[in-house]
Image (cartoon, rainbow, N blue to C red; front, side, top):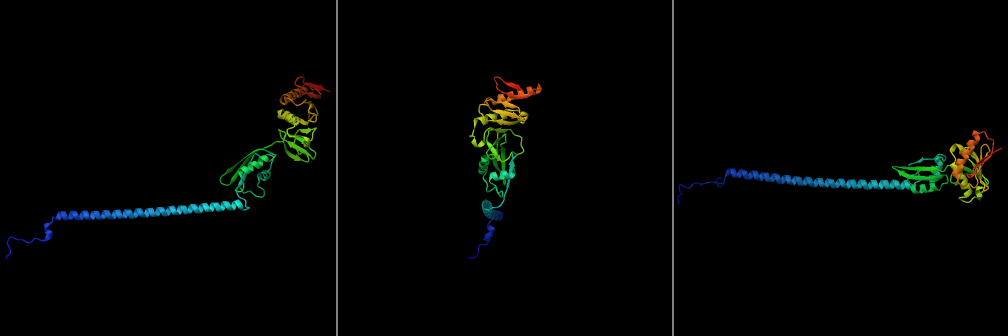
Length: 284
């Protein structure tokens, strides 16, 4: 059958809108770019996460190695006989630094890792020369010792020499001879025969501690042999009768008053009596 002269062949691609086709391509390309960006962002996020985990692992390894190193160093310092660190001492006037170190337990060398602050404090407080001690540890390797020494207030004769006692009557040192110090000497009893807290000795010590410092320097001796009649002697050999030693503070005031009066009046004193009921100056 002959072709219809009105029929015209139209190619398949000519039946679509060309503008619509370009828009679809742009959208497809945009969608592809977006997918690529998402994939790239996901890969980057994964990489960062892996890097973060790696850094965390390295930090953990570094910390573990550091802890092991510190522990190994501590163990070495704890067990090895090597010096390490410093001991600082404050408050020692009569004790030498070596004396304090020995009392603290640091003998041939100082290793603060091997020393316990509580142990040092306990040992120091047991030392007769020390009234109180505080021990603290300071970073990085220092032990700080603050101590209060017992100060000698009098000397007591013993069977083998002389005992130095503090203001409470506690023995803090023993010497075969009297050292170059100016302290009252307690006579009349041997320290070997005294019981702890002897009332006569305590009364005499309380009297001495009640005296003004300048007057205390003039007291050379206190005889405590007779509990009913304690007698102090000045460096001028003036006897000061103290009775039983009761009311030591008042007797100390009376001593100062009577000695001042005797000096002002030029009295050649045989003795003074601090009896609070009838104080007296006996002239020669």
